[in-house]
Structure formats: structure tokens, C-alpha cells
Length: 614
View 1 (cartoon, one colour):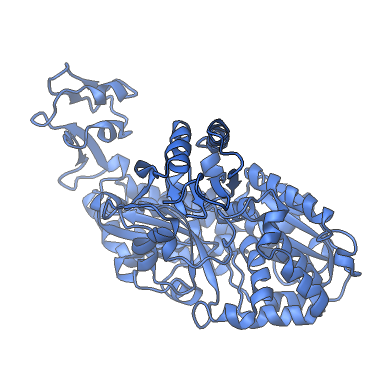
View 2 (cartoon, helix red, strand yellow; view 1 turned 90 degrees about the vertical axis):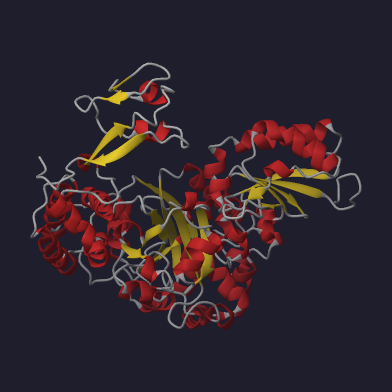
């Protein structure tokens, strides 16, 4: 094992400083590492640096030792001294900080051997976790801005558009429209000036792909935007980003400033007659502003509500001028396409879905985080090979792709390729890349209610089908999960869903019923159990469940009583406790804190004989 004392080349400690790791004190860990390196006299041969999001958020804070590639997970402030002294000075890696495989419990020391990374193919996330996003020098060292130089010196705007078109790149914001075709429409549209917009208004619950890309590789997105502006003939652009992403905004602004200082942005870029500048606009967090027409209206200072199309933005967008809008991931793919060629990019993925897809893998999954794989990779490989499967040896139940407007797919669909066509045929969508995994304890009826509650609350209210139709659907779902469902509710939900999908103005309303339709399609029996038997098979619906303490198993540890927020639990220490149903608010805290080896707190059906709900 190489150490800092016997290596001629410099060792670098890379500390992840994406939002997740920052929230877990990674900046302080970096400072502690710097102090320890100095204290042990290693400053000349050890450099402490930071990166953006590594993607493996569940394991943060992360520290990687390069060039070895030793990977440390769940690093705490007090671990800094041990890493420097034992590993860097003595040559003894700190094994207790190695990644532990959730299935085999094997400790894995090298970054490249961890299944979460081993089975990925990173294009959009190529630099995330490897370079300091606040230093343009590090982006230049990995061929940053080479694609821009090539485009401006060797290619005409039409050549750039043709290259992107031949690559097969489709919009990564959800709709999947061919990117090159969108650029061509905008270039050919009459009107001047033309505008370019990066849609970074990532509003899906649990999604953080765009945020992490902007935090970890802002220059990659910026370079893609400048190339796109050259292709369509735009001189001014905007990035519309959520105000809740302060770190992403800060790093993108830094990237803009350093790009201007190096003549990659601004007037007469790289000595040519092409000029382009970007303005950062922070959105207020309205989900509907992820829809391109609503985004444009919000960008112009008005309330963000969609408008009918046509005219399409490429013809009449911001200030009624031709406008091109692409997602963060779409722009981040462009420099690689220009550098490596359309044929290389189109060789990745499936027949109609080229390149890679980035997913935010969350939910009941062992390895949550950002995953980038070739389009068409089976869901099973993403969830089990990369994601590590379901924790606590529980059974897989469903996966929702595409965010709150996506569909819930059952185990029988695990071999489905993750691409636009296959997911669409199954009733779901690619969306912008959300992927929520559910285990056997998940109630799909309640999940459908949860996501519909989100989209209904985020409806702008402009069109009746979305505004009122989703409200009625939500009322029906709420009644079903509370034991008040009626036998014709399922068909009513399906009829309403079809009308809302067919007649809503924008993509929010057109896709909002997807969670309901897919859960009815694949899990109809659960709906029927809720309605007919007044019972939740997963015992997840609060009004259909009571909590009881098994007196024979209770050890009287008092944890349930101490944590009950309403003092509904009585009992002496080392004696069996009792829950008062009159006082219990069914929060489930008692069930959570009861020791796993004991499990004396049980969930029981509120209406065990299938009686009528209240």
C-alpha cells in the first residue's frame, strides 16, 4: 500500500461537497483533514480538495483518496485525524470506513469496485465527484471547452445541429423530443433576437439530478449552452433554476464569471464574431413552471401558467421571439457529442432512445443516489445490481418512474428496459429521471393518493380538467384509503383519469392520473380490498389500522411511552404496556421505536371483519 511518505506523485483527498454531504458537515471535515495533513507535515505531498456530488448520497459524507481510488463512506469529523495518520502516513487504510455491500456485508475499498459505480456509464455525470466545480482549471484539464473550440473553429451552426440530430439525443426533461430537431426549428424560425433557456426547475419530489449536475459540473452545462446558442443563433440566454438550490446557483454563477474571464462566454467568444451571455433567474418553486410555456411566462415576470401550443416556443417564445428550451442533462450531453462524435453517442442506448439516462434512485432501496446508465438498461439491473436491492430482505413491490406524474410498475415489469418507448407502453414515463422503489410494506393506493395530492396542489388552476378533475380523483382516493370507498369508485377513477389526460392544457394535467391508472392496472386487487373489506393489505393507511401492544412480547422498556407525542401509552418499567385507542393518533412512532428483536407493537386492522368504515 502506497503512503504519502513513499510516493513521488501527490496524493489528493477529494471531499464530496454536494448539498447532501454539505448538510452532514463535509466542509468541516475538509478543514479537519487540511489541519491533520499540516500537523503531520504532509502538506507538500498531500492536497485536500473538494468535488461536487459523487452520486452515492446515501453513503455520505464521502472522501476518496486519489490516485489509489480508496473510498471512505459515512466519514465523520473525528475520522479526519485517523485517515491522515493511519492511511496517509502509516499506509494502513481505515477499513471501518470502507463501503459495506448491503447484500454480502463485504467491505469494498476501491471506488471502481463498488457495484453502485461499477455498473454505471457516466456521460452527464462524467466529471461529478472527480473535479472541483469551482476551479475552471480542473474543467479545462479534462478537455473542458474543447467542444466549444471545435464548434466555433471547425463547424458551422448547421453542422452542429446535424451532429446533435445524428446523435439521437432526445430531451432529458421528460418529453423526449429530438434535441437537434428542436434546435433546427428555432434556427429556421423568423424573428430576431433568438433566446436560449436552460430549464433547471427540477420540481419532482425526491429528484436531484439537475441540482447535482449543476453543483458538480457547472462548466459542462455552461459549455453545452454556449454551443447550443451558437447553433440556433442566440445572443442571450437564461438558466431558470429553483431558488431552493443555493449551492447550484452559486457554483453556476462562479462558472459564468470564470468562463467570461477566459473568453468562453460574453463578447467575441474565442476571438470569433459570436457573442453570447447568460442570465440566472431563480424560480419560486412552482412545479408547473417546469412546463416550458409556464416557465417562459414566469421568466417574463408574470404568474407561471401554461399557454396553448401552437405557437411553439421555437417560433414564439420569450418576448414572442424564437426560443429554444432544453434541460440541464440535455446541455451537459452536448460537449461529449461534439468531442466524441454522433456515432459514438448513438452507439449507446437502445434503437430509439440513445445515450444515457440519469435517475435519482430513492425509496426503499439499499443504495440511494444518482445513477447513470445506458438507455434501455433493465429496471431489474438498476434496482438490484446498482441499487443493491430492498433493505431488510423485504420483497420488491413496485417502482415508480417519472416523478409524481409517472406510473407504478410491478415486479412482473422488472425486466422492462428503461427507455421512452417501453415505459410509455407500460403506462409510465421517463420524465426527468425520478425512480422511487417500494417494498412490501407500501400501499399503492396510498402512494397514488400521495402523488395525486402533490400534482393537484401544484395545478395552476387554469384549465377545468386538471383543476377540478384531479380534486375529485383525490377525494375518491382519500375516501378509499379511509375505508369509505364505494364499489363503483374504481371505474369512476378510470373514467375521470382518461378525460383529464385527454383534455388538460399542459403536461402536468395530462400525466397527473398516471399513478392512479397504473396502480389500478397492476394492483386492482388492493383497491378492491380497501373498498370491499375496509382493509389495507400493507397496513399503511392510517384510518384502516390500529396499534396494539402484545403483552406477551412487551419487555417494558418504556421506549414507546417515552416517544408517544400524546401520552397514549401506559405501563410500568419491565411490565407490559397498553395503548389507549381513544388517545392514539396513529402516528406510528411506537411501532418505529419498539426494539426490532422485540416487535411487541403490532399493526392490526381497524375493521377486521370487513365492517363499514366511519
